[in-house]
Image 1: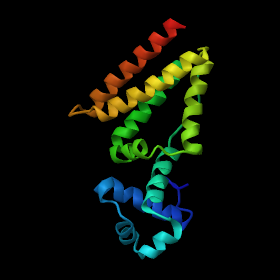
Image 2: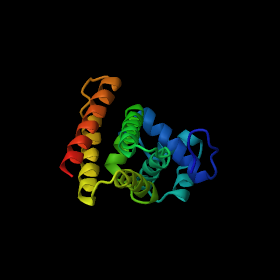
Image 3: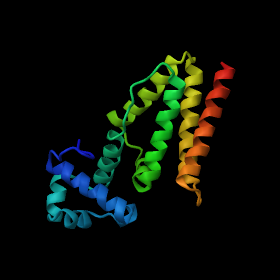
Length: 179
């Protein structure tokens, strides 16, 4: 897959890159196959050669966003690693709000989505938490991330990140005390 700093390998990836740029600039509601074709200097039929529908393009953009997620090497402190990863993920969402919202809207399936869940679950399990605590933390972090992202309402990014980091710490401390 292409991404920042990597060469575009296929025409399909070129369309995904162009769609990503278009969606970030104009918003999801302004995306169309015609605009995508114009953006990259091809005909609409060329876009349809690689994608059956606009829905497929949007799914590819969401998957590309997830594929670009960086997974740091775990340290000896899995809960700190978890906190750092989740906060970095929110920071990325705040830097690319239209793409993050597209991921929430599309709920892409596949390797990229599974990889994120497995990474987070691995960090939690390595901290010695029981499976029920792991499930609780994962679902709570998902809701916190969505809430922090959706509920910005004029808050600065740094305020949102600070509050979110604090919420993550409280959730993890609370669950750890219960187990």
